[in-house]
Image 1 (spheres, rainbow, N blue to C red):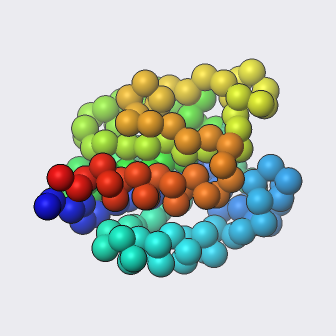
Image 2: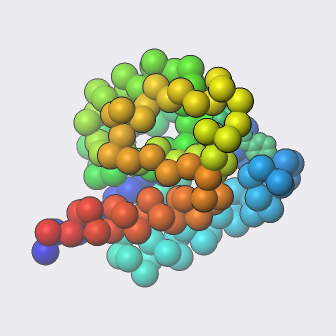
Length: 148
Ligand code: CA2
């Protein structure tokens, strides 16, 4: 049985505001609370999760590049860059690390500009509209994806 060791969670712009603004759209849990919960879940799954949040596009590109040697999977909520960033798409494609795209809100119920993602066709899968549970679902998916 092979087990994935390292999963990187990347959150993009403004997600540092989780739990502090717009609770109707993004919920009441703060980012530190969410990360603490995901670390607990990862521990039970014997997965190492690390987390990084960046407001800058280039910082996200750098984080993806840095993951190349050490991470077996990426969970990414690229925030608004999802809908605009060829650079993040190219970085993910360039490192060839399997990734899951997560959105807290159901982007398809929202403005049309949120319906297109530059990342989705490169992803293993996309989770949208499950609230912050989407991150945990992605972690659970990786747990069984890497079992042989
Ligand atoms: O639903 C998602 O997770 C999004 O990726 C969130 C992005 C948005 O641009 C995407 O279309 C969908 C926005 C993140 C903003 O996060 C905030 C959290 C709390 C308060 C304000 C903003």
